[in-house]
Structure formats: structure tokens, C-alpha cells
Length: 405
Length: 106
Image: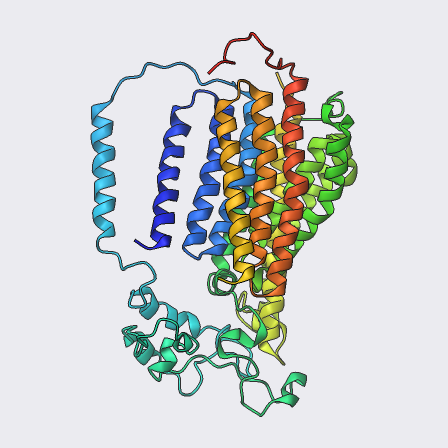
């Protein structure tokens, strides 16, 4: 049993225990806190699987903001679960057992974790790599694979590692890709002759390492989400926008006298004030970093937006909502909610007007399509970030504005 | 074993032991305040020790700096969180345990 399997087993055991505890605990506040623990444990499981983006989202959304919103809801409802008769429902247990058994049976057919022979690496990845992000030549728009790249050879590659040396300390073989060892060409990024950066390179010679996507968008998750599945992410953002709008329609009432309760009782706590004042600039900076850096590493609009929203919520919790409304009045918040979606679809429309297809970012810079890709994705990430943070803040504000019983 | 590995091992082991004592205190102590008293302090110190221990086996400077920064943030954030929880309990008039109350003797 390797260390990773051991850690995974331990973590999944803890996840199961936490899940049972969430159901069993009668105090709803404890239940809400346990869901946060559950999310953090799941984030650790994702980290163990090397999927940092998912782990980041799980930690920020599941562990962070949803706990705040759950507790915000519980303030208006009951503290304890209603007592109910406990009896074993045999039919439900049987059905659950059968479903679980079928799912476990299904996993026997799945490829091993990280298996290079898995179908995903041979049927979807070649097409994905043939997208604009992978093969940027001098021509803007959808790119054809460059000369020498054979998608069919790529697809039929069985993933077997050619030569692993017996000596485990000899790790040099990892430096070259398995594909390169088999003589299958990796996507190469070609410099444009008239691009300023190309002066330092031979014509047609790649300026960056082959997997570096012209120095931009090396994070495959972002290039997948924002380019390959750009529509998908746009509609995800729209779903969040719709959730925010429906919440405003459902909960917002005309502002009566005293809708702003008196300043929070924590405002006179010197330690909390000082630490919050110190922390908020860094939280905001980190949120902006996560959004901007989303194309280069784990992170992106969703996670960054949640982090930014958390900074505002922290401010409101310590200094009271009147102070928050002076910084960010609700009308501005509503406007920004829409602006984010507008930025996303506007980027797509700009590409359309420049002669490409919808969300074909390479149109934004025809001289160096790689730069266009990077610019488009940054704009799109900012759109997502603005909408997500403002919707989260709106949910918090609406929950807080309800008169607590 | 090289010198920096020994430093790391000692710091990690110390961090683990301190964390364990905190967990034991959490189970052993009679009421809310004393439990936070053990858990808050030991956790802050143990986490910082583990992060500082990891600095010595990290090869590149940037990651080392990040680890030190995380340790520093934890040194500020963890006691503040404990303070906030205790203060909230105090504002809700949770009475501290005194000698003679039930739950004190194991």
C-alpha cells in the first residue's frame, strides 16, 4: 500500500464519518459546520488526485461561502431539527443498497486512475489539442493541426511507456514526454514572423516549450473551460446571474424604516477590527490574483469571485452592513452582477464582429493569436469573477436584511 | 541524514506531538472555554512549526517564501479566530466552568 493510497483511504473514511454525522446531528448549526468540514476533506481528496482547480473550488465554495450562507439561513429558521420518529425503512435501504452496489459494479469497468491508456486520452484529447489554443500559427481563427501532427497516430497510441530504466533514481526519462518517445509529434507553437517577439527566434521555430501554448494559457483546465467549452462556462455564469436576479425578485422588499439594523455587536472589538482591517486588502488582492492568474494556474473566475465576496462579507460582519452599503451600495452591486455576464458575452460578440466565430478569442489579436487567446480568457475570467462575487454578496445581503426573529 | 532534514524531522515531530496534546486537551477539559484554551493555542503553534519545518526541505526559494507567509498568516488568523469564538460565547452569556460544577472530574 503506497502512502497515497493510505492517505486517500484515511480521507475517504473521514468523509464517510462526516457525512453520517451531518445526518445524525440534531443541531443544525453543527450540521452546517460539518458540511464545511466535509467540503474541506473532499478538497484534500481532490488535491491527492492532483486536480487543484476542483480542490480550490471545493474549498472556496463548499468550505467557505456556502457555510456562511447556510448559517445565514439558519438565523431565520430553527436552531434544532424537528424531532421525528426514527424507524428503519427497509424499502429505502434496499433501494439505496442496490443503487450503491450498481455504482460500485460500474467502477470495475473504469480505467485505472491516471491510466494513459484510458479512452479519454485517445478520443477527446487529440481534438482538444487541435483547438486554437494548441496550434497557433500565424493565421487567426480556427486552426488546422500543423504539418507533421497525425491525429490518428495520437489516437491509436496505447500509452505504453517505452523504456523505464530499472534504476528508480534515474528520472531522466520523465523529462521527455511519453508521446515524444514514441515519435508522435507534440503540438508546437509557431511564432509569427512579423510579431516583435519573433525577431529573436528563427522563422517557424517555436518560441516556447511545446506545451506552453505560446506562453499563454498553459493551464489546461482554463483553456478547456474558457475556450473548448466557452459556451458551457458562459451559461454557467448566466445560471448564477439568474439565481441572483430571482433572489432579488423573491426577497427584496421596499426599504422600510430600520431595515439596517444597528451596527454589529462585534464592531467594538478592537482585536477583530484591527485584524480585519489588516486582512481585507490581502484577501481582495488574493481574489484578484486568483482571477487574473486563472489562465496560468489553478483558479479562475469562480474561485476568485468567491474569495472577493468573502472579503466584503467579512467587512459587513465586523463593521456592519451600513458600512458595507457605503462602500458598495446595492444598486452598484446589482449593476455589476449584470456587467459580468455582459463582459463574457461581449467578448464573444467582439470576436464575432472581428470576423471570427463566437468566443474565438484569437481574433482579438490577429498579429499574435496566442496573445489574443490570453486576452480573451482574462476578460472572460474577470466577467465570471464579477458576476459570482456580486451574486454571492447579494445573497448574503438579502439574508441579512430579513428581519431576524 | 543531512542537517536540514534533521531540523525538519524535529520540527514536524514536535508539531505533531503538540497537535496531539491539543486534541487530548479538547477531550479532557470540562467546558467550552478551557477546551478552546487548549485547542486554540496548540493548533496555532503546531501548524506554524509544521510549516516552518517544511521550509527546510523545500528546494526553491519562492515556495519557501510562500510557506513562511502562510505560517505568518496562520499566526495572526488562528488566535483571532479563537478570540472571536470565545468572545461570541461570552457575549451570549455562556458561563465558564467553576470548581464544583458537574463534568469536571473525569
